[in-house]
Length: 384
Image (cartoon, rainbow, N blue to C red; front, side, top):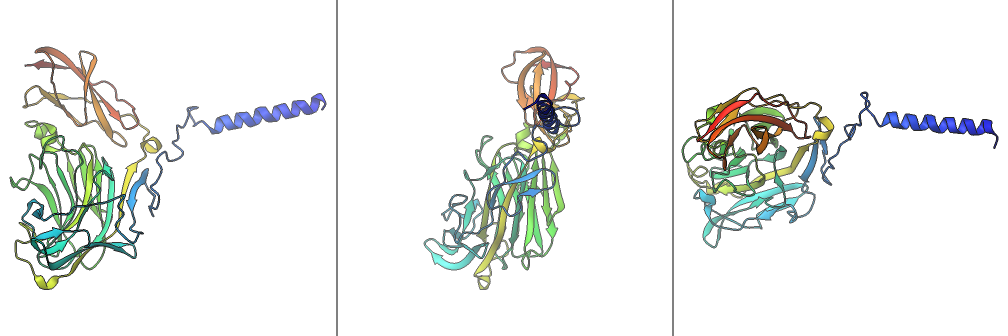
């Protein structure tokens, strides 16, 4: 091989290498870190693996088996009345799968201690979720006395038993009022036992057709949608709840699992009795899908700086205005005299194991990709 040919080959190799290096960089000469592709893998079998905005379906049941999938669902077997004086005995036989539809059947029949049977299934320890979007396409049963629900409970009740660790009702319906569906939360501060629960009722026909019930769950925010349209939302407000620990108002910073059930009777469902002629009656679910945001793909900006910090009414506690980010704030770093002291999921922090005295407090907001805001202005704080 002569020197001329060698120079041509060498030039080609250098040019090819340069092109490859440029292709691996963005316009600023920085690595893309996967921003040109998804980093999360969609769940096998999910029929809609991606949604706009960087959402990836990471858990799903399209009900393609000939039975309830034991790797995704647990059966609750009991006659405890659900804590609401319900009339059913929950058994396995009333949850069946056929032609891609899960059907939970309510029956008027004698079974051990009860005159009605139904089923209740959960994803506890098989599908535990924290933030994201949950979509369930379902059709409600017909009949006075029916009480179906799509709802969530905490995987670990770290703030205490119900309602202290929270409950999220994505959809509830009572058969004696068939033109409405209901969305609700229950917490220590806001729950139906106190008459302070927060929710909304929506007028619609949910028994003749399937509808997609959706919860979009972000830090400090819950958004309910029906068929893609927002119907309700809740945003944690630290200023309005500075008399209690944040979790008494908004404990939704932990993992929750999903529950599907059809109750019969009970304090609410049976408030106007039960029509035995309505049975058997059917609560049908077409699919359940859980989406996580692929933050590495879509998040481009760091959070904004926390501008204002306040002393709360609650002892030894501060709160602050929420930082904003293009795709959400994961948590906040709390600095005491320039050193990191702790972290908070929402905009409130109670100082523990801090000696009495005067301190300078600063806060840094951190997004889900680890990008940090500028440090907040100093706040002079006195620990009692």
